[in-house]
Length: 258
Ligand code: PEP
Ligand code: MN
Image (tube, rainbow, N blue to C red; front, top):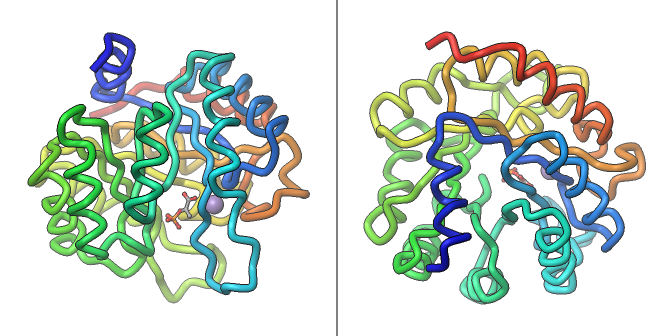
């Protein structure tokens, strides 16, 4: 492990880490432009989805491997750590080969045990941090059990609450901060809050982000795009780059109350 990677892992273990970036990598320009703002705003990690888990197989599936090099370029230009969702052995290998600092397992794959086992195995020597999103229908023991599949090989797991299915049609999902807090207490693992997929609405990002910070969570995942209305995926929940900067400044005005 080189010293740079070690430093990044140390960053993630601090109390508060923000992951920002577009839902999907769409073009080199979009990736690099977003990364520049995300880094300048003080967020520690840049995120973008390369292989998108879509409900319908006919929907756009993400640019895939072509964006590996765009992410590398973003890291080269800004020095920010980079992260993406992996969904198979080949995507794990491809991302590790080019120096991704953090990988995540998406909500839809969060109970796919062979994948959890494999991501743990493949990252065990470098102990690259792995974010495990909560399944949208997972109870606490299912979420923590899934984390243990990774932890068997790599203890460096970060839990991510991203909202669960509920009866409420006003928001995309229901942000379950209570179970997220129990997960943090019982597992001893860092827990970050993905306010974007929880809410599905741009106007809820700031208030929910403030709540998560005040409640003593360990960070946020927030989707931001240079032109959210034209985003290929999740356009309603992505905030503009200037709103991301404002949000980061506002978050600096509050501290964890826990
Ligand atoms: C994402 O973060 O890009 C994503 C697809 O999220 P989730 O797996 O939580 O739906
Ligand atoms: Mn998304």
